[in-house]
Image 1 (cartoon, rainbow, N blue to C red):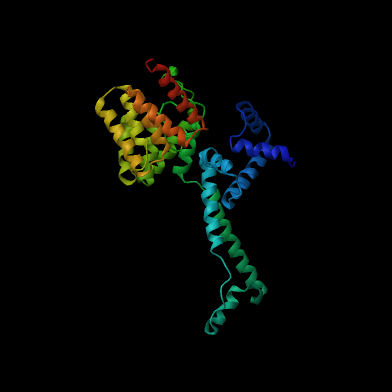
Image 2 (cartoon, rainbow, N blue to C red):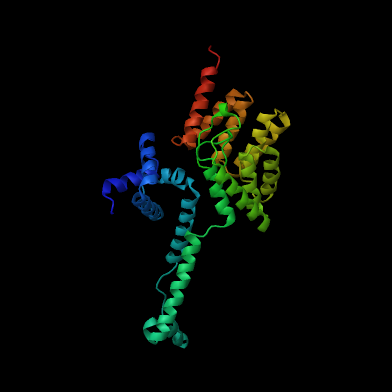
Length: 329
């Protein structure tokens, strides 16, 4: 059944996180019970990606698209595939007539000059190639990609560590629970199997980084550090290693561990000053170490880049807590 305009608008606002918390939950419940709405949402996802690539979204919508819509790995892959297709078609333009000596080549690229049987064969080949490219771009997932999706699903309701790591959709942190949080154990086991399989097939930096994130979320900090150190050799521009050292230091306070954590955050920010994970986690480190002025400055720096996401809410709460604790003069 076709959806009306208000329902399509609701789906778009849901994807851009423009609804209230109550409205967001109502949409999520409808997605679980209404297959037609789920299909409509996928259509609106594709339309949003198309509008983003064409520059048709407003400045605020583009910002929310990048912050919330692209928090999901599947949507991010769709965008990358769309960008690749757009680049391909942008390069296609009418070409000038070829020199006469190459004129005989034209008939091979002109379907109207081919015999019917040859034209059908060429058409089948073209459809097969386009279908294969489309499947690869939009639907194919490696074990590593599927493992990261499963890892994200494992902690969708609650994250087990306070630090922020890349590729993890926001979930609240509840320190009073200790190690017993709300984990999807089925997806957790699936993530382990897929990521171990990906690592055994290709133990590169991406595989090390994925395993490091998995161990970090499982609070196995030494194993996380081991893999993230390997990943850092190929890609120093990530905040995962600093987060692992910080979480390890919180569990067993050690100034050398905190120093290594800060060094990794600073290094990541030298390479990419607006890396939100590093800014968020560095402010947490300062706050944990009782460095109030640095922590307040760190949270303000983060909020200059992100003022609307759930991560911003946590940053604002931490800043408010520090300001309330400040000695009265």
